[in-house]
Image 1 (cartoon, one colour):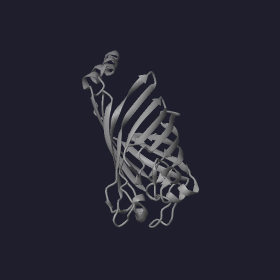
Image 2: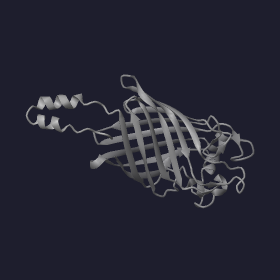
Image 3: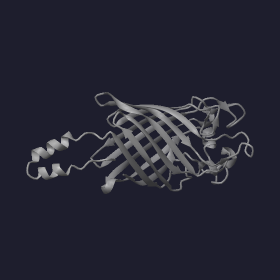
Image 4: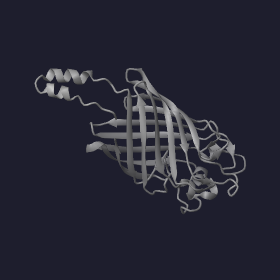
Length: 276
């Protein structure tokens, strides 16, 4: 984040405190802001599903924001879910998720705000529908919109491509997210989340011409807490789980390399992150 240090104001403040306060209050809001973040997690959880087969994840990204409300950013993490079941996903190599996003956020009235934008999930790697027929690339583009109030938010993400996370004929698939981040103190924050992942269309995912909703839709939840440390570090932990039918559990169970592990199992994750 770009900051200005007003040395003259500090010197003057030693003799005339009111002048120093007046100068600090008059400091303009930066037009451009650039921040970064990096974190080490015991595993990567996305919408209730482990993306690293319960192995650790290194994550980080950069965000740019303009004083008008426009913003853009990128974020990355290691993953393993695509190569844990290559016969199902079609990926022989893929160990990275790259996200690219941009949007606009602002105030509706008082403590109510909004956020709209686009998010591209990109999974570089080797995918072959010839070696593994019936599989599709997992790259996914979502249009999202959120309404916020203080520490509450409701967000709707709508897939606008036809192979949502590798599930074919799934245009219109959506994810609805309710999240609360309640600041108990200036350092301790409690978090609760509930999400609904709803797949549209039909495919051969778990049988010929079967509903994607029957095979891939599910609900997920999360509860946790974070604590702010010196030097912009944060430590935290959260417990996650999913609600699925037996058919959906089969769909979200590693088939080959990972020893038939259910990706949506109730699990606890800890992390240490830093912003700069």
